[in-house]
Length: 282
Image (cartoon, one colour):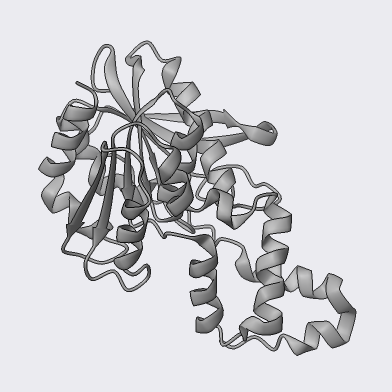
């Protein structure tokens, strides 16, 4: 649906326009209906920033095992990441699948953003490190789309993270938003440019600072960038752009069949993922 952006401007000025921007960009909340059936899961609450709590599932794999935080993408939830749970658990990894704030069954907050996804990942890592079943020196993150960008941001500032798997990350938030603007038939100048500037002001971060093509250069741990060759939401060229900006030989690029929301058909090739993680935690 094409938005009639001129109406807010005429009716109430900038304040009304800002309201419409925030409403239009708000993540849809989809509550998961499925559960990690067949796995030894626990329903948990994880404290995060702003005195909020995250809903999640903890799936221990045994005593003092390496553990992974698994983070969904924009408008997603933990249930959407369940296809990865059974094979990763069988490979010996404890898992914590969480809903980001404003998603699934987690608490609301004033807004959701890539940096807030990263804060939630960091909170989940702290929670995992306190579990007796987990080796606190063997923690990693798997993220999808915005969750992948957040995983890279978290790893760029948390040296305790031992491994990152990025599934279908975009290279730069501005490029992603410009695609959204085009899809909504919103001209970039002057309205689109204003939206991008407003969003950066609200989230408190410059896109250039949190973009995966920037944070990858600040990551030293083993990192696997996975992208589906048929992804029509985030072009596969963006994975190559992230990979080209690496500064560490520990960064790998894996291009596989599949689209954006099936995580590049990685479930069918989970052996490659397990192999990467085994090397990272060796």
